[in-house]
Structure formats: C-alpha cells, structure tokens
Length: 81
Image (tube, rainbow, N blue to C red; front, side, top):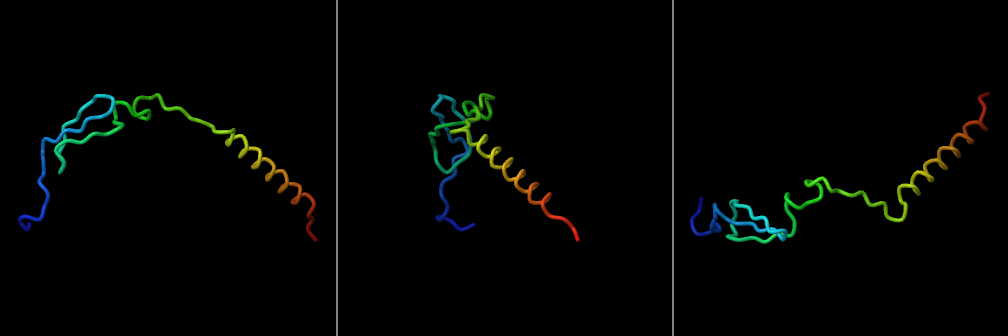
C-alpha cells in the first residue's frame, strides 16, 4: 500500500439519523448525518404503505382484461382449413 495517498480511516465513526438514533461504524468520515435508518425506515418497521396513485393498478387490470378478450375473439373467428 502506498503511503500518503489514502484517506484516514476512522474505526469508531458515528452516523446520526434524523430520528435521533446513532450508530458506530468504520468510515473515512468521522461523523455522518443521515435522513433515514433501519430504526425509522417503513420497510424495517413494518409500517410500509402501498400507495395506488390514481388507480393505476385498476387501469392496468382493465387493459389486461380488454386485451385478453380481444385476443380470444380473434382466435374464435379464425378456423383451420
């Protein structure tokens, strides 16, 4: 390893979340501030919400149903010779 080209490693660095939780970790920065962590992230807390903006799922299901019915109509109209 070359000398004087690598950043200083801090084995006891601190990461502080906006919710107030602090973590000890190793980093090249001595102190970090983060907006979200495992303590307050909805995925980890179990408070995750599925937001269906403007009924997009319903719109997709309607399009899929329409495509399936039109495909079936085309298949029924064709006969083998």
